[in-house]
Image 1 (spheres, helix red, strand yellow):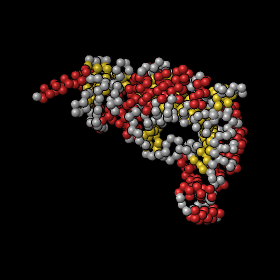
Image 2 (tube, helix red, strand yellow; image 1 turned 30 degrees about the vertical axis):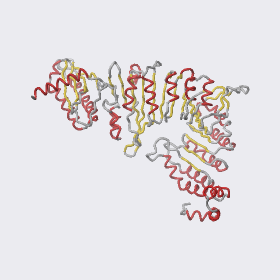
Image 3 (cartoon, one colour; image 1 turned 120 degrees about the vertical axis):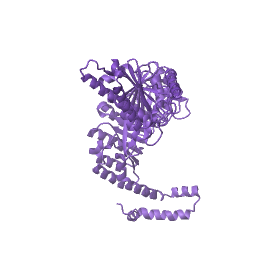
Image 4 (cartoon, helix red, strand yellow; image 1 turned 90 degrees about the vertical axis):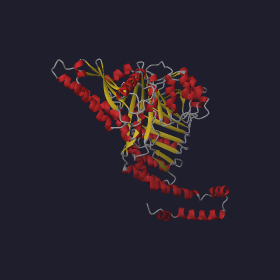
Length: 594
């Protein structure tokens, strides 16, 4: 009976081996794999199967030059024993990677022994295929399970550190890499064999420290990348794992059907913060998908082409009933000039970022439909005064200028001269500015009459030598009431903090914000700066609120709105006036913090 069952089991395995299709799922469910081998001609095939009747999988195909090594049971059993011990120590999918690593180490050691032996009968071992694994379904291997805990994510990245080649059907293949450290010859080989590349930037928290790593997926075709995307997009949408950026680039400007599915998948994934496309030739169909699909990610187009010079994209985006969101155009190959102008003026964008672009026939100051416009390293060529119809005019509510002053210093003064009338201005220096450039900025700030919000970056420590002068200009300003100060990796500077506190003491209506860009879960330099001035900011907000309550107009509005008795408001007004007139009383109520 046992023999018949074994024969039936063997027949089932042979049937699976012959008829198994990639579309069928292989689910491990945390069971301990069973490791065994089969000898086929000159190949020793290491196989793995799971309990409960799941079909087997081929892990390693070891090619041997001479038959004696295959028949040498001691050497083969040594490999099997190592793999079995490794599999028993770890559950489920983790055992798959561990077995692969252990087998590869054994093969390398065996090759070293063979190469050092002088015996002519000794065979050499060649690793023919690693993880010969069809990837046509997102259930295969279920690698997303590794991303549920930081330790498992670290394990996954470590296993992919040297790269993993995944071979599929119909000559489709993938190469996965856990970092971007390539040897020159390896990168040349990848670029010659793979036409598409997808990059995921994963961020996770480990021991209260931020960890960040890229996983690159190289594919022989769009279909290969698209089919494996769902497997990586199965990341849990939690606070401890964030996909901050996805970049997709392609070196072949002929797109097959599968790119449309990949494009829709990337835009629809809610956990993505940014999707970046590089070197893409968007057809009319793909331009329409990009412009019309509902999404909440930041779209970046870098070195891309849009069909019809962007005409299809513009037509579709104007038909949207909801705002498009954030669009960044970085070194985009030129739109048709008229289409680009209409895109800026008419497209329903919440934020428009222009990077490394040449704006021809443009006139400053700008006007745009987008409420927030950022320009970084853009060359502005002004148009003639008699050209009024096609001239680019942008006047956003918020305007952020980014300068690499080495590259485009000649446009710095020109742009600062044209910012009158803005309510929000951001200046980001990507290199340390000179004294003359800072003085130009301070002069511009003194002349702006309507500016309410000032944003300074890329790191405010580049302004350290001119910080006191900036604080003096802000102290005299009657309109600027909010500062957004960007800091990076530098610790808080004592002198700059002292000057900032003096500004807050002189300007009780001033508010300061230190934006925390990417990672709010761990203490950052920005939070350290904010912690230093938080008590003073809280005092200013309360004090300014008390001053505001003295206004008769505000009291009447509150009474009309809430229907409260004016008598009670008069009593409160008297108390607020008393507190505002006696600063020592306020300080005592605040606990004598200053």
